[in-house]
Length: 126
Image (cartoon, rainbow, N blue to C red):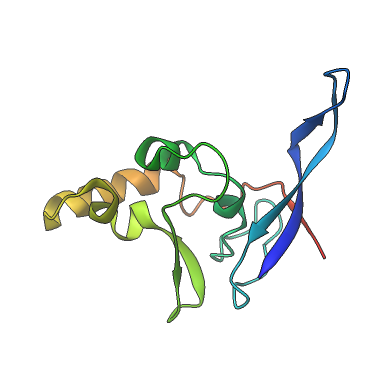
C-alpha cells in the first residue's frame, strides 16, 4: 500500500530557489501497519519515519540517503515495523557473532533514541 505524507521539516524549493511549501512524498506502508502516533507519543512500529527517509544510522549502514531505509523490516507476527539494526544488525554488517550483534543492537537503540517517542513530524494524507 502506498500512502502520501507531508513533512513540515522537508520543504520544496520554488522555481526561484526559495524554500516554500512542505514536501509531499509517497511512501510504501504495509496495509496492516499501525497508525502513526502523534509527535512525542510512544513508538508503535508504524514505520512512517523510516519509510520516509533513513536516519543517520541507516545512511551509514546502507548507504541510502533518500527514500525508504533498507534496514526497515516488517514483522508479520507482531504486525509492526522494526529497525533492522536493532533486531538483526549482523544481517546488514555481515557479522555472525552473537555477542557482537547484541552489543551493536544496543548501540543502534541508543543512536536512534529507541523508546523516546515518535520524532516524525510527517502528517499522513489520504
